[in-house]
Length: 517
Image (cartoon, rainbow, N blue to C red; front, side, top):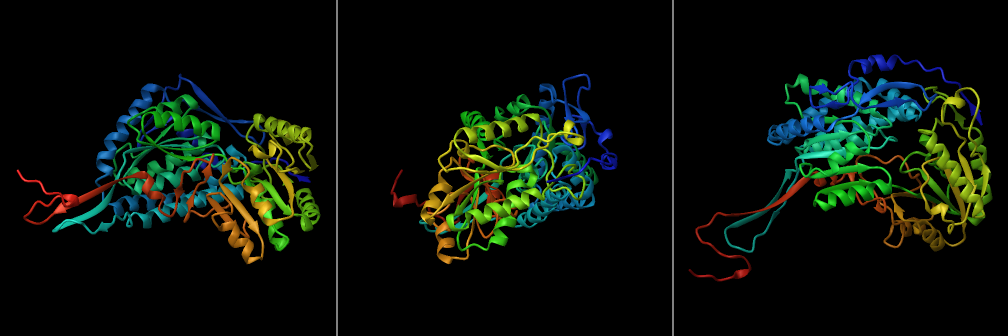
């Protein structure tokens, strides 16, 4: 294990104008907030320093946002899709211009290394490009009518204000997956970023405002509220918001589903992931080791797609374990803005405690920590939240293995038969992402078949993290069933309408019914 010392330059904060828009509520071109009201403080997990205070959205200010959003929807929904796409294209250009600075803010406020922070902004740029194309492809279908001189077809219309609740680990990308698609569909958006990374939300809102102002668009198309659970409940209980897209823990998602469902609203839920990689005896081990290390320790294990379980064939288990130990020892842990760092800090002290609790339970159940798992101390580590990624041996039946701990813990397990590997893989309540490393065609096809992996994302010779925006992102079971970004995920942000036009002179009834009056 090697370490780095924090020597962070904060010039990017000034270039993003943090001090100029330290507010808590915003519509398109207006911002406000009672500076004497409740605040939340943003702290960097690098060394615990406070970055800024952000005003919590009050109920009064929330009502202003809703009012502005509903009014803006009347204009936005009637703009042609390609014109809405043009606005999204310009947002993508604004993000390109500020990619480095916004990437640094993501790294500084959340703790992921700069390369990953910049990569997250690149995802925002990519989804803007994707949404631009989608704006010309909001397709309906024409069907054959059973009645003479009738045309039967369907079309899609915007829903209205869409609520987006995002988590700290991807403080800007997941917002864009929802917002860029919703926007080209004709919806307006109300975003509540995580209270653990509010400045990332403020920075993005600031950049989006510039585009709205240049195009003389009404306030309320892209909106921001800030705060904790209470502000989120303003949104989930609000019948004026027909769709809530929420990313976070399974427990949070259950509450959102219950609340929104009670008012018959819609949800897109992206919740926990207890993801596994299977390494076959026929795997290319060089590829498998590289993918596993990144999937397990990338973002310090704080991705919903992090690999938490490694299911390895008996014949290569010891070799894989030794190679992983060697790789873990070389991982540089420290300031995420230092380009030599591979693993940054956990988000807060609570995350560190949860990791230590999980490792304790593992050992109580008979598992073993073969490398790492320590809380680091001294220098930068005394004020930040740093740990060494933990490589462990375990058995599939352990209760702790079936839980998702949002930290860099990888549980290694043995298998001897491929059907056994699939059974181990599916024996958790979450179903987000999975990977299989094999050069055996039959194994690969079985893993992708109906009796294979039960996840929403399933990869062959690729890790569990790093999904592309062109495909629909999401998972099954406790992961929530939601889909975002690519493929036909756009349909979730619209309402379907079936239409019949009678262009004849008679009035035939459906199903051949005869009715005389």
